[in-house]
Length: 146
Image 1 (spheres, rainbow, N blue to C red):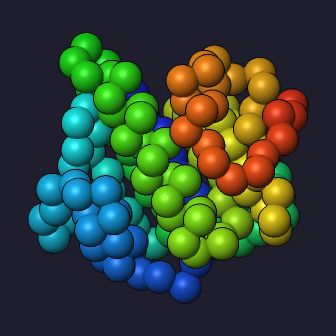
Image 2 (image 1 turned 180 degrees about the vertical axis):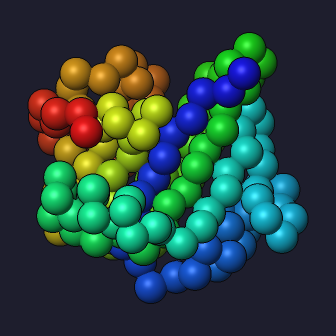
């Protein structure tokens, strides 16, 4: 079984370029379809029209890429969450993109729109050790699920 997080991001990069960037920036293992690191496998694909519409309605930006982070539920889950966070923050920092990180495709973990980074204070993801990894300015806020 796996836990799934999805990063919906608006960027000019292609899915393969995002995976290459993460492989290089974080030292993750890469092949043509995915990159992997401790406790996580990361996939990237072009966002579907339906997915784009849902995110536009809820968050007022149009994602171009859907990234899936699959975490092993029974092994290295915390390492997987840390890699997921590092990958997300690195992408946001390097691309200045609008994005939303979702757990199970509905529960908002973080939202980045314009120059604002909002961490969902109602999400159990944000324990102190993960908060300490967020080096850019952020605010804690209440973000409703999809």
